[in-house]
Image (cartoon, rainbow, N blue to C red; front, side, top):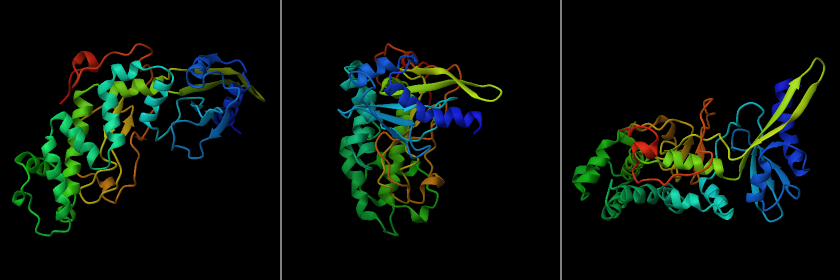
Length: 332
């Protein structure tokens, strides 16, 4: 076994055992246990993730009451991963008594709840109405396009939809216009506009990152070295709140297509700089993308060195964001 394999894989299995046995570690894993497990790790069982790259954590520590802490155990940078539920993070914080996140990030959590409770169509439509992209009265008009599926003579200009909805329909470019399903096309166009508005003109990105960092997620690193003929473990370092997450963006590309419906919801992408996504059919979504869950994170990218998420106090958000709340100039 080479040294990197020893540190990143063998020690990945060793680290939760160290916590359960109460062996000394540096950092504040004990504080996380008090908040999220109501005690220590001593009575936990371990579940290892059997889908490399499919989860943000490497192991899951679960106590008899069903409370759990996710453990990221990579020795170098944080674990490469692709899905975690943001709503669960909110629930973990509230169960631990940290209700200030809901108070201070009310808008961001409201967005998560709309996505979580809604479906493929209703989620982006309700958010669009909240954001003023469409009106609540226009939602039934959008859904009326369901009856137009398979109509070879469909013409958006000959429908009874509002002028605003007709324009939104035309704002989207489909990869293959001959295969467009009218309802899917319009909902996709709205979903893209919703994501761009939330990512560019609210502080959702920073709020969601702060929520994830303070949730039941502990980073744990092995401090080890390679000598001439052996590997030496000097100790383990734990970090909570996490510093892995710097930005979280809302994404429509995985689940929304003009030609097919995955049934999936809006998902999230972490540690990518928010940018406006063109309202154009993405090739990756034209082959009926698979279903996704509300709050699913995709394409984890390790944060750049020196970047740090909020380490404590959270700040009240302001709807649509200002340079002060966004930490950057408003972008269009």
